[in-house]
Amino acid sequence: MFDRVTALAIIDKAYDEQRLCAACGAPTILRNDGGVVVLECSDLGAAGILARIGELLMLHTRHVVIDVDEEIAA
Figure 1 (spheres, rainbow, N blue to C red):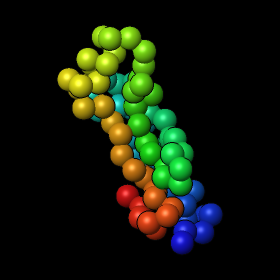
Figure 2 (figure 1 turned 90 degrees about the horizontal axis):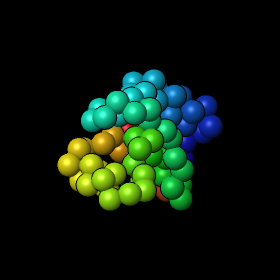
Figure 3 (figure 1 turned 45 degrees about the vertical axis):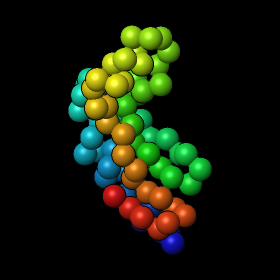
């Protein structure tokens, strides 16, 4: 189990290393998905058919930073 200080340090480091999406240059965001902290492109999940096609063609940034349940950190 991660303590708060360690978890925040891991999250801060991941965000500092990749503030922009590698594919489109949009800002990245951190999202909590049921105990899993994910760093992803802010444009993921945008509405519209063109946005969905773009998500398939470009590999937007999206990776797990911390999985609290599995005690895994990137």
